[in-house]
Length: 380
Image (tube, rainbow, N blue to C red; front, top):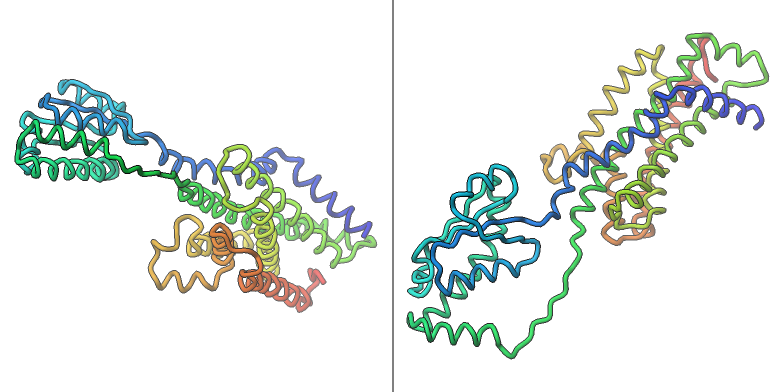
């Protein structure tokens, strides 16, 4: 074991002597978090709307008061001359205009004279319409029962607001945004781990090309110890990548993983075995670093995309979803998603077995290929 530890130490010192490699292996995985923040970070912000009131009636005043009571909505009364500037500058997401005759149209049971303007489209106006139109429908029903009598409407509306029944509401935490951010961050981490493992495994080919490998074999170091030390280096680097990324998600950026940190780490450690096994297969079937780089590009990026690491599987065609079931990245993400849904490892034994099966298959193929190599460059 002394020789193996020396090889591990030598490889780590050689690799991280370069600041570029520190950036590549330890900082790059965090890029996925920033991408996720850009994609989903603004979804919980308060929507700001402007209100222009040309009606000045009781009903329009009550409607504006209703809008001001809504959560996640900031309401500011503005003049119609500033609508364009407010929208184009981005200081407001939408403007609701109550034209003259709005109150009267509600009293007659035919609400009209209301306009919603936004340059951000249905994503903003749809939220406002959902609450506003339902409220206007309630006002219309009261007005119809009041037969258009404003005084009777005022009394009925006041009774409606001061009803003796009570409604208790409990706010539920929306975890969809944090789950989407976690999914995208881990998907990017998976890609980085695979590329990092391939780069570290290519050290074997690099040291063969510069004859370092053969000089090492002239010492008590054996080929098996050399390969095993490379596997250990791979595992150390990828475990650090997983710890840094998951810890940054949870502790630095305060993104809820929706599962204990250690459970997510266990899944990523299992996946690191798969990444190492696949990288050894690529090296075993390559005669040079260029060949290994080309082969890895043909394998890693397409499989990462097919597995849904960059977007939810639901948006992909059914045929692609079937193909993804034969890829380890898909099973890794599926395991994490089910853990987020509240499942435990015991109920996910099939997923765990499949992940270990992928790792075992890759290692067996790599060992077989190395053992069948009878050239002077044979590893084993």
